[in-house]
Length: 277
Image (cartoon, rainbow, N blue to C red; front, side):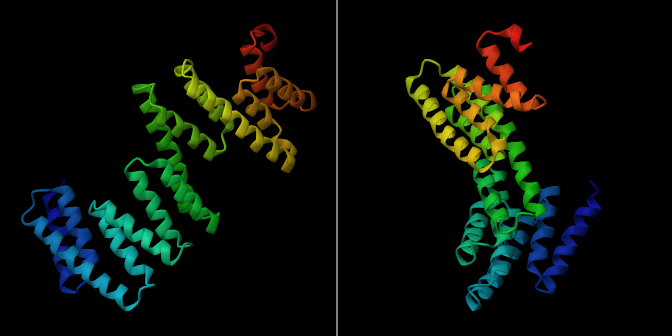
C-alpha cells in the first residue's frame, strides 16, 4: 500500500468531522486502521467519531422511534467496526418496528454469515424474499450463503466425520436449496458414519417418513414432483419401493435423465449392476 493513501483517508476523516459527518469519519478511520493498525492515535479518533455518530443516531431515534434509517446507519458502522453483536441487535430492533424491512433483514443475514452461521443467514434471506422475491441483492447473498455453508460444513465433516451437527447442517442447506437428491445422498453418507447408532438410525427412518409426507403433498400439487416420493422411500431405506417409483417415471418419460439416474442408483444398491449399466 501507498502511505499517502493512508494519510488521505485520515485527512478525509478529519474533514468529515469538521462538518459533523461522523459516519463518513468512522468509515475513513476504519480504513486507516485496516491498512495500518498502528497509525498515530487511530484507535482514539475512531472511538471518538463512533461515539459522536452514536449520539447523533440515538437523538434521531429518540425524536422518531420509527426512524429505521438511523438504526441501520449505526448498525452498518458497528458492522464495519467489528461490533457484530450491536449491529445484529439494531437490525433486530428495526424488524420489531417493521418486519418487512428488507435492508435490516439482509444485513442480519450478512452478520450471521460473517460468523459462519450460514443456516441462520439463509433463514433471514428467505424471509426477505417473502417480501420481494426478485430482490437481486438478497438472491445473490442467498446463493453465496448456500455455497459458503456447504463448503464450511463439508470441511467440518471431513475433519470430524462424527460431527452430527455439521452433517445435519449440510442436509438442511441441500433441502433449502431444493436439491433433494443431494439431501438424501448426504443423509446416506451420514448414516454410513453412524450405522451402529440406533438413535441415528431411528432418526433416519423418521426423516424418511416426514419427507414422504412432504413428497406426497408435492405430488398432489404437481405431478412432475413424483420423483420426490421415490427419494422419500430411499430416505426410509425402502429401496424396492423407490425403484418402482423411478421405474414408473422412466416408463412414462424415457428421456427424464434425473429419473434414469435415480433408477440406476437403486439398481446398483440392489446389486443389479448389469441392469443399471
